[in-house]
Amino acid sequence: MARLVIVSNRVPPPHTRGAQAGGLAVALKDALRRREAMWFGWSGELADPPGAPHSVTVGRHRYVTLDLTPDEERLYYTGYSNGTLWPMLHYRVGLLEFRREEEEAWRAVNERFARRLLPLLRPDDIIWVHDFHLIPLLRSLRDLGAQQRLGFFLHVPFPPPALFAALPRSEALLRDLGAADLIGMQTQGDAMHLSAALAEFGIETPVGAYPVGIDTAGFSRTAATALTKRETTRLIASLEGRSLILGVDRLDYSKGLPHRLRGYGALLRRFPEHRKRVTFLQTAPVSRGQVAQYRALRRELDELVGRINGEHAEFDWMPLRWLTRPLARSLLAGFLRHARVGLVTPLRDGMNLVAKEFVASQDPEDPGVLVLSRFAGAAAELSGALLVNPHDPEDITEALHQALTMPLAERRERWQGDWQALSNPPGGNWAQAFLERLMRN
Ligand code: ADQ
Image 1 (cartoon, helix red, strand yellow):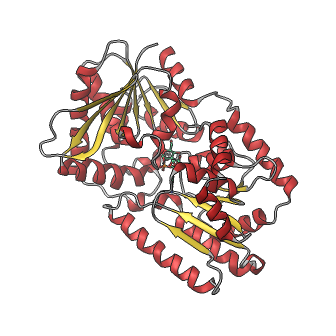
Image 2 (tube, helix red, strand yellow):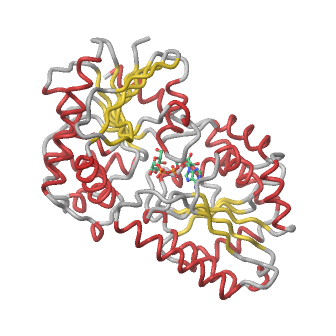
Image 3 (tube, helix red, strand yellow):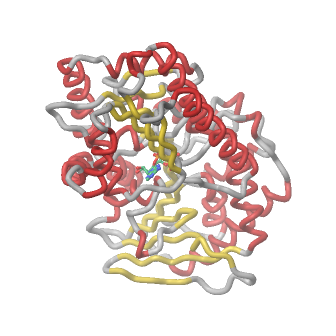
């Protein structure tokens, strides 16, 4: 089997691999199992000058990482990737900030990465580049003469072409994407948007939907085991029989956290029968703390949490528990299993693996209910969830009430459909399907 070369912005360091919050490490675990691979990307470290690549080999996997200079981090990562592309791709034109200097630094870092990667490649490698940070790398590799099969996967949404056109220099970005042999997206909707945007410039690169999946059976086993862990037992004891509503996200404006908290506050006002009968635990580890919008969001949420607890708490009941530190994955699985409601309400999300992990973690005999944003990629697969418009806190309120009062038979029926959908996805394993199509092209 040909070697797989994964290129992504961050390469998880060996000791934390698989254990940290972050989509890609989790999503690619299966694709990397049982094959020779090289994973190439940013080390997460800063150095000036950046120096030679670091290389670590663990079994049949080699990890090669490069440092960024502090300026590169500011312009390529914090500036253009997180300050421009992230809001643009999540339909948030109002948050978009564009500076030419940042866009140029983004291109320069991609070219430097391509030059460093090229000598490490073998002629029959399959190269798979991930996410929006590294779009120009596709064109740079081709310009430098790389002839290998070259795939690209976008983990986040892609807006309709008329919205995307608001991005200055968007044509150059689309032409860079055109250097790939195959582009994978999370949903049919995203694939249609990108195909249409490419077609406007006569670019015919095939684009397909390969919804990122999880190891459903494996996560289910982890969750069942995690239920008996000391920490899970302590969580359950601390609830004193109350139903647990659980939210698990990175602290990001795409995740719809303020609307979600308002929806919960309204539940306690409109449906007072749930007062003292529920606890909402929201975990949202701080991410991208250098970006102004993220700092502002944190302040807004800290205040909102304080207000909701202040308004509704009793001397012996705190309605909302707010954690800005990450939870270990092994604990998360047990917490999800115990939750009566999984509350996943992003304003826009490529997929949202937490929604799938919630379904996978449930006890088939007594499953909880997923309340899910219709704008998460996962909504296309999870028809058993209660779908909400996350911009409307009252819609979240009503779905929470429905979930908390849903009879067991309906919970089972809804859950079983979703479990089936995740266990046997129509396209098979997403990464395998993508790689097979890439080889055929
Ligand atoms: P993310 O935006 O990081 O990923 P998501 O898919 O929700 O989002 O989560 C990825 C992983 O991180 C999941 O396995 C989840 O359990 C873990 N995680 C999230 N919050 C956590 C927390 N508070 N504590 C511990 N673990 C946490 C990007 C895109 C998504 C897309 C993924 C994968 O933004 O739309 O689903 O990539 O393609």
